Image (cartoon, rainbow, N blue to C red):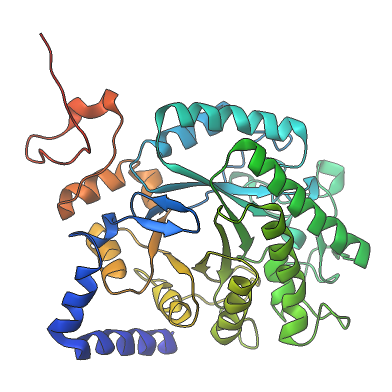
Length: 401
């Protein structure tokens, strides 16, 4: 934590040293309110720099979306955010975190998710992204409201897989150590899910290489003691995630953006850290990633995270300085001024909100009103524009007899 505080202080000092001229230079490249300026990712331009973070709902049936996802994603699609990201979606059944997690591994999954997306498209201009994922050794969990612990096969679960037999918790049974055939199967599953995304008309894909799930498990020495070409050195530990990125990029048209979420640190001594994250981010961009989404933690129950407003933003800033791609910041970003300042200071190119948007699904509206910007709103809601914010809704016209 002292390191994070020190980095934050150095970042702040660097901006102070730039003086007024530096600040004006930053402002001149944005709209009057940077948070509400457009952002181009590959061939996609989103209206503003607010992204709805992927949020697991644990409410699917056999990996298939249903009415809950229609309600949940529908209201967030009307929030005014620039991009909506569908929750972590498993590329094979044993890649789900819980039996209630979304999947995109068969026609049934594709068809039911397609119904939700088609409905959203009718009423919202928001770009739609999806986070493709594999839970690895953290799979076969109970839903959080049922305790969140390992669900044994006898009770409807399965044996999780991972880079080694090490389970997530020491008290759990061993995971299945992935063989060469398992690795090839999972890479092919990511590519096949990508082709399904294309058929669904999804605008962007993010690969989940964070929070202790399968791609992160291969990256972290805490979870990956392998002695073959997928373990040991940093280059070897990156090999499997980079092969997944390359396979997805090959199946995803060049103009469609691809992102990668990583954990910048494990928050555990001798684990994955910022220096390795920078190396991985650079390699991910070279493999075709258009953005890096910077989170942290999740691979070890021994993690010690020092929480605070924007506590992961310094990691995003450090990575942004070293990669030629957009960088997203996430983690306790709750206030409009805070989010706008992150963009203004070039600490990140976009901010991702999760819990704040669950609590307030109109957060982008309220942020635009507070910062003096405008935002897209459905015509059916135009009459709700407050009198004190006459320019809040884009394109508003209204009349009656």
